[in-house]
Length: 352
DNA sequence: AATTGCATCAACCGCCCAGGC
DNA sequence: GGCCTGGGCGGTTGATGCAAT
View 1 (tube, rainbow, N blue to C red):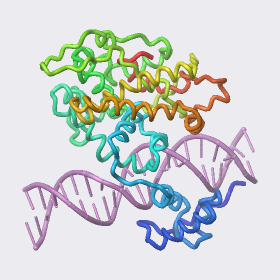
View 2 (view 1 turned 180 degrees about the horizontal axis):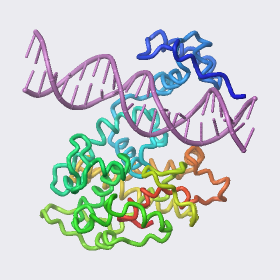
View 3 (view 1 turned 90 degrees about the horizontal axis):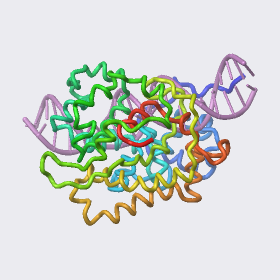
């Protein structure tokens, strides 16, 4: 048979933790550890709390070296980079930010960072046509928000918006700025078939991609930063999906298994990281701040990503997040780990 | 001063997965 | 192989505080 029930839900206390409860829990764990069993822990120390609640309290609040609030500029960028690439995998994102908890990052993203990024373009007519305004339920590209939300998850939509912002910020030919391209890519237009049936390795450059190779002309006459043709996606090899269905609700492609060598991944990742980080910084803090802070910014970004690619830390990271290569002889199974919605996003403008 | 609306964040809920039985 | 549980995770809720009216 299985194990004993988790806890007696009728007799557990809910709501905010008192200082006494905190002290009990902290003292016990600091002395004895969790004992590998959160469920039994509250009974041992006389707390009328669910084991899961104890675990959450410890991890999010009582654990040593926890930082609250005051997110730095570079933390913002790391969060954004990772969110765009892997979505709301808060535990993975938190693993890259020492002292931060997944709950903290999740709250920070939902309450501030998301608005900071998505709000940038909301006022423009073009963005209004394409953006999904979840607060007001306003029409989106002539299609009801209800229908849109059925086709794409919130997370995928947000990430798509962010992608389009990054891609289209300085690019009048991009998908984002080119209504002629919208129906083809609209989630309701052709939401699955090209992706489901296409090998991850054979997705060709889209018209958007080709257009983005052209020299950029800024219609508004603003100063231009040089667009980065074929802006690589630093995370295209970073994507890991270990669930059977994507956020779109479609099964992940399981045929056509493609492998990606770690050497190639590291090279692509490092090269692309700088580009994406710069673009993100432009979005978050404005173009002007680019000048004079670029060296530091790039260094920061590279340090972050270097950690992932480096030695000891990176191996922990890879192992923790499913990239352990024990079973794949130093390669990462690209196709079997890739989400269709991510494929769709990256198929819009980036090389795969 | 009272009311309303908004922002923040700690905590809970429900689901999934790995592993014990 | 199937059932059950603990651990972990992401999404959501509700309490609280602050700002605007």
